[in-house]
Amino acid sequence: MTQTLFDKVWNRNVVVPESDTQPATLYIGLHLIHEVTSPQAFTVLRERGLKVRRPDRTLATIDHSTPTLINPDGSRPYVTEQAEKQVQTLLANAKEYGIETHGWDSDNRGIVHVMGPELGATQPGMTIVCGDSHTSTHGAFGAIAFGIGTTQVGHVLANQCILMRKPKTMAIHVNGTLQDGVTPKDVILAIIAKIGVGGGTGYALEYCGNVFREMSMDGRMTVCNMSIEAGARCGMIAPDETTFAYLKGRKFVPENYAAACKDWASLATDEGAVYDKEVHLRAEDIKPMVTYGTHPGMGISIDSLVPAAADDADESALRYMQLKAGQTIAGTKVDKVFIGSCTNSRMEDLRAAANIFKDRRVAENVTVIIVPGSVLVKARAEEEGLDKIFIAAGAQWREAGCSMCLGMNGDIGQPGDLIVSTSNRNFAGRQGPGVRTVLASPETAAAAAVTGVITDHRTLGAAA
Image (cartoon, rainbow, N blue to C red):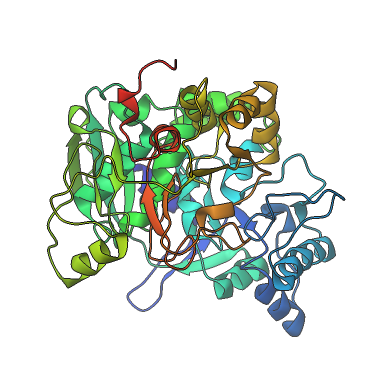
């Protein structure tokens, strides 16, 4: 019987199959935890006298509430006492239960969906969970990866399993040749604009076609990261030589790596396997994308006009964004630019932004914050001199963390600000009360930073 990638990984990890009255019991191969969604789970363990079932399958870091600045005296300016308490509680809990933790003293600290792959903890064929919506990032390696709630964090800590109904499968095919300057972020924003924020609800997505096969792992992670923004349970890309080259030599990969790669290669969808639904996009039709509303499905190419509202929700979104139907989105004034998040804070993202910033200056009255996804990314960027390019341009080069993606650490805009952001969500108030967010690629964000308005980066040409 032919099987899809999702079917193969699902079947490898089912402990008890689902029935009409009961969800499947699914084994979890990797549980990633951070400071925001784990404290209550550990409290429940203590109250019930339970141990962490598999500390060796659990990996902790601090990222959401962590400051991205350091005070002159070396201390860290937490936005609130609660934020500091969250961090300290995670560090204490992980130490108590024997969980490997990447805190302030670790060279591998970073956003959970950046540092997990860097360590090789993320591997094909796994089931991976985290108390964070964008766990779908890890599907780029051919894993079933999805976010869970705090109660479920407790369940996985206690028994290394989760109850789950098997979702349907959807193949998203993108074939052809991308236009110059079109990035993985543009591809996923185009997909979400096509199928909608609810188009993937009830499905596991598999991204198929030459466009994804030709992407680097950084690009694939950007795509899978935003699967949740289409409502999907998870998003996956079949593992291949690109995957194997990325993982080789990393800390957690199997010792017999050749045998592991042979096994992982077998996960690819069988020829003739049937999906519950299939969607097709032509690569040539995709242009640099931006959002214009208050959810990621409200996306248009950067050379488009703002669409007319289809309903009251769209009308409300346009009012919030201070945009009118029929106006050009390019040329809209920008107040801040954020380059970072688990979507776009890896080396390729920073290099792409640096190519725009090189020999240019941030526009007057624009604030730019650039936040690497991990300590390792920060160190590598500095080895390449990217930090010097950013600073010379007038941007702020910060410490690793989630930062302005959701602003839990205090990195937020001011009411009314328009922020061009490389993150994954543009909900009203996501980056601060009254803040307007436009999602874009690192290239488009950098172009906005140096021009002061939303700009197609392809029009800039070489720096003067």
